[in-house]
Image 1 (cartoon, rainbow, N blue to C red):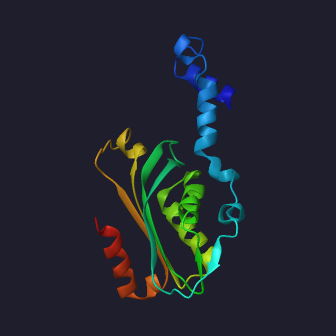
Image 2 (cartoon, rainbow, N blue to C red):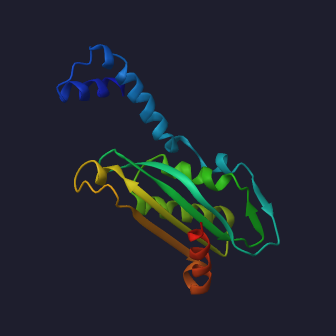
Image 3 (cartoon, one colour):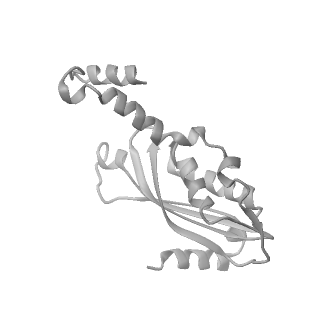
Length: 181
């Protein structure tokens, strides 16, 4: 990967031998490995058995989960927050596992629409919940730094499964709770 970054630096007309760029191909390769580490993660290792029996059937929400991802179209970051809810059905997942699941999918080349769906499907699969809801709000540097160059725009995506899709009251309760400040 370092060689490719060196070639990119040369292709834009820069000298990769100048002092400030000498180690840039190495640093850029390490950064890309870190930013895309989700490809090397496995849901089984992330959950690590942290599914617990519970008779709770009320909504569980983890909100304001920071996320950082990379647009698959321009390799530029998008940055935002994710809200996840589920309706337990005999078992709950460890609190830290939901942000870890968000990170696993976010740390891949992505579009926000697919990221939202991947998180929802994964939480549903792991918990067998009666319903799962995911909302992501993010700012995309590909829209801010190039193209339309709109600094204050953001994208909101949602996915509702099970009772969140079927019952408007359940969906509205979730949306009201994540909008509170």
